[in-house]
Amino acid sequence: MCAQVTVMSAFLSQGDHCVLTDCSYGGTNRAARELFGKFGVEFSFVDFRDADAVAAACRPNTKLVFSETPANPTLTLTDLAAVSAVARARGALHCCDATFATPLMLRPLALGCDLSLHSTTKYFDGHNMTVGGVVSAKTAALAERLHFWRNVHGNIMAPHTA
Image (cartoon, rainbow, N blue to C red; front, side, top):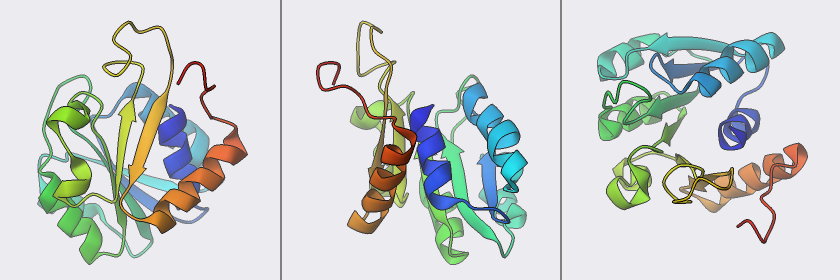
């Protein structure tokens, strides 16, 4: 969850809009509705199997498009290249939570995403003994912004755990 909250904190402010998959991890959905919603960030929950639906949900204040593929828990798939093109055309960033696929199977940055997110608790750890997440950024400027907000939240894994 720290990875999702860091991304939303870094790239969304009061009055901004985010298009979020309607089939997302429950914690991501709750963070959007309960945490960021109360701070004036608006969300549209859309079926990401249809890139045209994502495009239709975008507004002038859309700053972030947040996909998840394969989605949890239904394993629905998103065409990351098509959704990335939609986000880019509207001046928004595209973040993909690709936890279920892992970076060995799916490379969202290579498919046009600006940010790639993975829960390290699941497939990275192997024994499910740690809690963590990782966000990879397409540019150094995006990575610097993420690092700043990671420090603000204090969500940095201890060296021994890492």
